Image 1 (cartoon, rainbow, N blue to C red):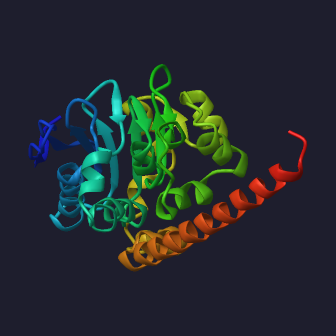
Image 2: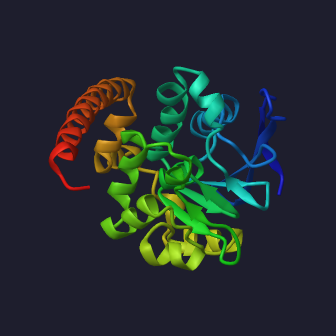
Length: 272
């Protein structure tokens, strides 16, 4: 396949950089392949490059069609955020990560995430903001493992799972940090199909997706469909939820202080 364009991912701290390469495996089907070793972490560099690639496809003179994202690294679609990097940049969430999520969520063409390998944490969140997901049938897991390393989900991160998954699947994914392989991911609604690029092209043809963007309302329909997520992904929504979270933590500190004092009083009269 000939390369339509390439967006570089500059080196960043411990990350060696890489590129996003756009090819056209079928007419009006645009394949964005991200290669940022070792595991396609979502950083300022990779998020900016993805945003640039999406802008090029929308405004660069290409025929509206379907956007497919995948990885050039066989083991990983994306291993999520570089937490140290993300936490060191105050604006990373609202101005880069959430902007990227929202861009995919409301993109004016159908989008498909081809999960060739593991999609963990932020990597799975990125995939969930696509319209469809096709997962490798023989390797790779979809997992939200924040429970395992003690990081709570932000409202804008969790909203997409509430909107797109049945409650039981959401519970298993988040509160059990369960790792779903391809067939199991399809069974609970995380993925729409299993396969590789050939299956994606068949999926596109079956659903006639290349023609869906022609009327110009595809992105608007999605923005209304997912309006809760759209609002939470905005800078204003992020700032409001951060204030709410701080108030909640203050209230929790007060509750724990009062409970600890009450337990000491109970200990004084209980037979322990």
